[in-house]
Length: 275
Image: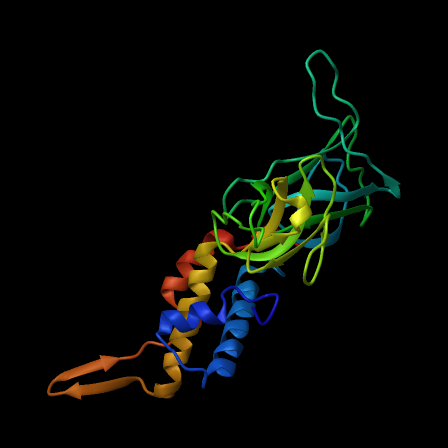
């Protein structure tokens, strides 16, 4: 994808439009980025790929705060009145809940919903911008297990159950050892990735790997592709409101800020939490 914000690839849009040549590649790539940014603005979401966010809140003597972005899969830091709050250990049978923060689990499938960060045995005490939370949010598949093939090219493709692969979040071995992303010819303990295909070294064949990666929800990709296709077709009828087809037939063109078929699909993804 030309931009990290693009919701669909140039190849997919050209296939949708049945365009074989490359004469309009630059125009189409610009359309994809423009429409992708517009969709994010409509959703009031700065990004949907795994991204680090830091936000401040006013404490209100509550036990919970709604985070502004979702789905959240990692809390990096929670600070209240300048004091860092640790995560609360998981509850175990026969033990009492310990002080710390707890994050609502994310929904398994998109679009998901906002999540609470809650405190056990304490409050987000009243104050102005006295709560700071750093976290990672975005649509991602976490901990997908794969086995490295024993024959060249030692590559595996992600399952991507909810939409196309878009970004790499990391690879670990089954024992938790982090692998290093390489640009080419991976050696032991390294890997390369391109468009959702992970390639490993001959030394790591047969090993179980744990993949994590960001993806674009399929319905958002479809919205971007159909909207970009509509704008591409519009250039041949700029300023026209209707067109005679001969005889008594007339075709009317309706131009809206957001096409109806796009707006309906975007609604579940809109951010509605107050800033």
